[in-house]
Image 1 (cartoon, helix red, strand yellow):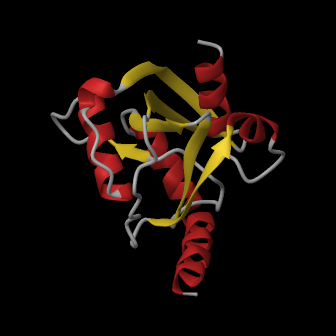
Image 2 (spheres, rainbow, N blue to C red):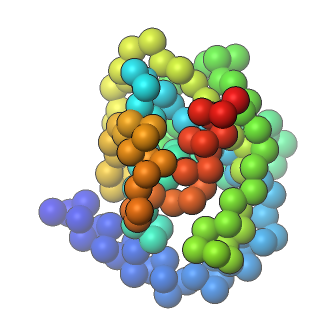
Image 3 (spheres, one colour):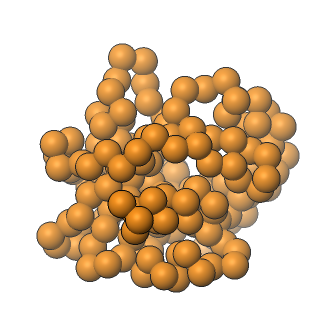
Amino acid sequence: MRRKIWAIVGVTLYWIMLPAIWVYAKKTKPRARVMLIWQDEVLLVKNWLSAGDWSLPGGGIEHGEQPNEAAVREIAEELGVSIDPADLLLVGENTAVERGWLVGRYYLFALELTEEPVITPAQSEIVDHAWFDFQHVQNAQKGVGSTVKQSVGTWLNR
């Protein structure tokens, strides 16, 4: 129940703060996003401060940090999963447009896992997580951000 309330608060704040988020997104450097892949499924998360859509885990790149280092740090912080930066595959540098006007730039990394990780989501950031089949992600009419669809498409067409 607490996570559900936290998610509602996050979605409400997201929509209230959307103009500031738009300005922030335009002025920031690219972010790092990670596709954790296990048995032809990708792990998606719902962040507390978001429109409520499923997204890829990841986040901002700190000053002096390399994109792959940021990806590793974000996965550890958000999901409690330790990964080796050498195992990450840089899929590309992408620009995504969410909702037709919110532009985000990001480095897309992928990691094909050999076993399902034990995920302990950060209570303050992640309100839900789940594994999704690639086709489900690509065919979703709503609830999955265009960044995720674009990333999955990039991965499948590599």
